[in-house]
Length: 131
Image 1: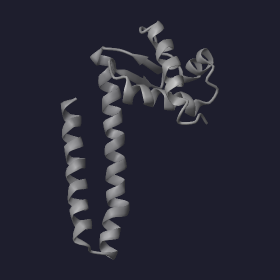
Image 2: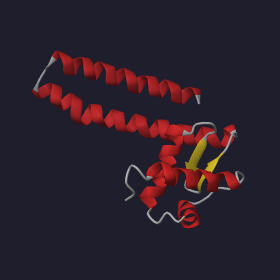
Image 3: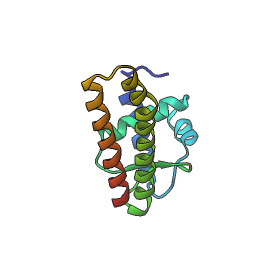
């Protein structure tokens, strides 16, 4: 696994490769092969770094690979997928961890946390309807 210090340099390589041809999906194995990044996880970390730190253009991914795009028809499914994933993770955290913890320790802070998580999941559901 690449060290945290190496991720920006790997991200730059991935960004340059993806910008060479924006009209095609680039499978992650192909990104790794073209940039010399051997580990799948390092490619994923580079893509995450690009999304976090170089947000000039949407970088989407799917089972076909990754690509930069401004096409809403490509961005929308990616955004919906990521929001559904986040909603599922938060809903399961609430139902499987927070609520059982409250039953063991009915702290007012935990009850507030539960209410806020419930609102967050509801808000994400509302966002999903808009996309």
